[in-house]
Image (cartoon, rainbow, N blue to C red; front, side, top):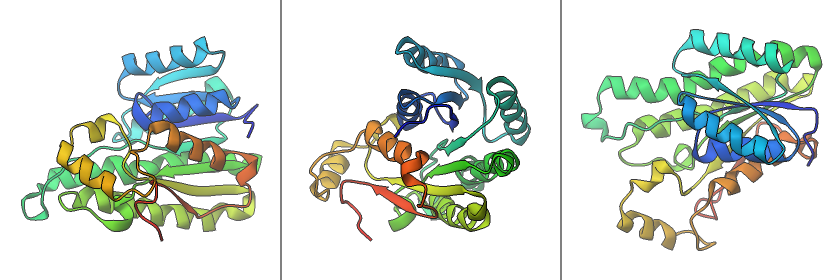
Length: 247
């Protein structure tokens, strides 16, 4: 699954799943642009990739800011020449029961998790159309498929991301541009580290493979969808959940 000669941009790439994706794509030969808000963590990721012989650059980006998205994508293309692969991974949570959820928390999660993917995708469509090749991969969630109490905003944003994936796949497929989604289940990240031990143990009981996933598990799925090995796959949601959800 070589990605030699490809340029990939990954949002939310300063830690966790996003950083693991950047490392995996770089290991496959891609030049990677790591985009996120935390410059120090971005620099650490770039250092890790370049010290292993990979090619990486950091771009500070708040995906909730449309003007920043436009300027950063222009900067990536100016510096790296193109964008072949876009991974919309940036995401946040603002958990609360629906009856108590503040509108600001709803808007923040939908803006960061869903609207940003639409805005970032818009920035790569024209370049990808011109080169007649592209891979757009959206990182959704098992909770966008099955729902989750206390996460109506998060689940809605991730379900919306699945719909966006399928719509883009239909719009761009004739130009050799695929759009797919990866739906992680219970993955060991900073986002899940705050969950209680009881919650984790109960979740583990329902995972047929008997373990919690790692960011590398998700990164491997993304690398596959970004490669030519997945050239006849589009509009698909690839579950990476150990069997926790099937269907």
